[in-house]
Image (cartoon, rainbow, N blue to C red; front, side):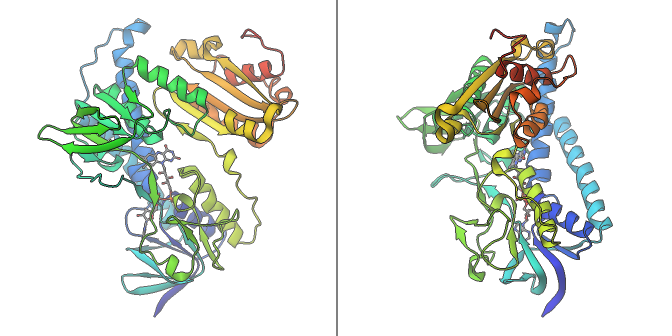
Length: 458
Ligand code: FAD
């Protein structure tokens, strides 16, 4: 028996699902939001927010340790994980309360429990069927592991358990040198652990421009974060004191624990999607640029859709779908225009194409410019190293912007406007950037691209 019919029925209240709910309600649509865990999903509870709180605490630990470089007398006496966790959980809690209030205030019906798609427009929760004129699948993702690699939650853990650790491990092996792996490696090193990253691909954060990966590797080397790239994992043995990881070639690396950060798989198994005829590929839900699946009236957003598994992508797709359902004909989202940030120390941020991809698409039409943060006053004040790299079409727009350095994640807003508005060097170069800011480095890079380099050797 159908309990209620909504204009929009959403399965999953993570970044994709809840943004869709809020926007749909704002547009006057009735909304049912099914959630088996906590409103806010991965990002709020076990993803972006708690990891960035840890990274901020790590930055403070580094500042305390390095205070004398700035003439400040301070001693770093260690990390009290109970205190760090209280701070982290406090941030999550405040945001969770705010989100819960927003959802309630918009008159959204929250249906608590595990939902299954039991008809093309029906979601069943604990035996009760709810229907929607439109259904939005937003069930998110989970931490993957490798065949034969069992997560025991103690010695072999995922990011979820890593976020709940009540101690700083003396040593850790991080399996996977992608964004999540590098962020945890960075935190633990700042907190005082010995860290080794094991990565099968030839470089860290391999989705980024090669220059960014190399800069991160240089910085990690300097920080004494060990990494073994081009080194596939073979096996792990849990011992009385920790783990012994064997990598291809036979080397054994030992540590107190192993963090498995080898990517995230779509949460779609057993949810009835395929049974209702939704086209899937390797567990992901296939959706077109309007976030529509092949089943009429069924949409999909967020990490279950192939592409960048980022909160702001799911968030924007959720808004897009609400507007699509309301008939507002929103403009499709350009995947390449979605900003990406790795919040390690130093940070990597990017938008648009990396150089290799741009050359594949445009060949010799591509030109690049790199402005070193050594020529940027604010970066010198912060004592951070890195660069702004522009990838542009000759006499055409900038097609990729790549940044490395502490706090460069905050610059990505301007970078994404330049990319998404197809800015040319001559458009951006004359913009006045506040002084002294790291944003000036973006201005300088565009001056260089326009052939008017001021603070760099042309
Ligand atoms: P989710 O947030 O996973 O939400 C899905 C929701 O659906 C969950 O609440 C789940 O409980 C619910 N659900 C699933 N199945 C059912 C069911 N059958 N019935 C009812 N409810 C169900 N992204 C960034 O942009 N920036 C970052 O800094 C960042 N850091 C990250 C750090 C870590 C450690 C991790 C793990 C992820 C990070 N991400 C980051 C990725 C980001 O969290 C995800 O891209 C984002 O949460 C995806 O949103 P979503 O709505 O698709 O799914």
